[in-house]
Image 1 (spheres, helix red, strand yellow):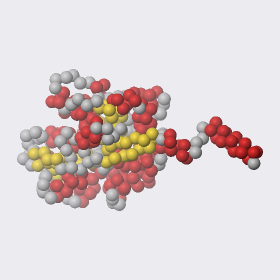
Image 2: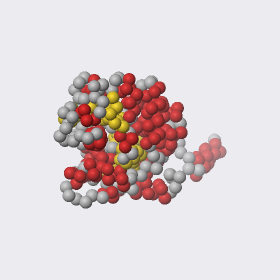
Image 3: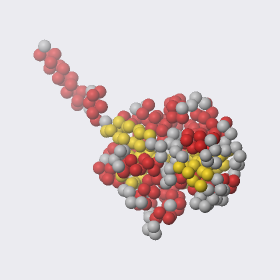
Length: 328
């Protein structure tokens, strides 16, 4: 009996010396991260892939992704302490920063637009929206920002030529067009096949503009990064590896897209995967040009201050990962 006890102790000591842990011990080492996200597209199934394949847990993160209908609401919740970090459009974080919040962009996994502007069957060009009503999720949201860009590119003044209404998420905005409440809206490109089948017209594809923009940003309070740089690095690792999985494992990617979009339509799933592969970047550095795109559009909010790239980004985690060779 004594020999058995000694052998058990020896085995335990050996396992510990090899760095092995029991399942319960492993669970205790995971860092809980509450991540808020909005939308029903790339961000949702990117996170889904990471959780399906255990990628975030691999890097010591127990990720809880919580959906909120609008990016502007996400940032309010972030500042109230509901979330540790947020994944949404960078313009929303920058607007909050311009208005005094201590928000910083730590990574951008997509530096290009992935939205289209669509309208009902009777409207075939942006200019035909003059005098009409258009929908955004909420004022100050990424959908509002992109709406302004699309309308300006089509020759309209968003402040004078249209009436902008807050309607809610993508599904609510499509329903508003079908119901005649509004005439046009911005929409994730994932909806293109379904929109065309429903008789909608695609008036503009913002991805075709080649304009750089922090479309999918990971941002948080500067104080959180100060205290939790290791955690931020681990989350970025998880996202980067999830992008690699999306690009190299179509079966898992399609399963995640099917769940996120709640559809079995093959054309829709294939199109969503194609667009994701085109816009996602596993080396998720924000770009100077992308930040400037937002600054140019939000010039009125700048209040005469000479804002710069470094005012909006915190690259500590990315630079350390780059130095460690993670993105090679």
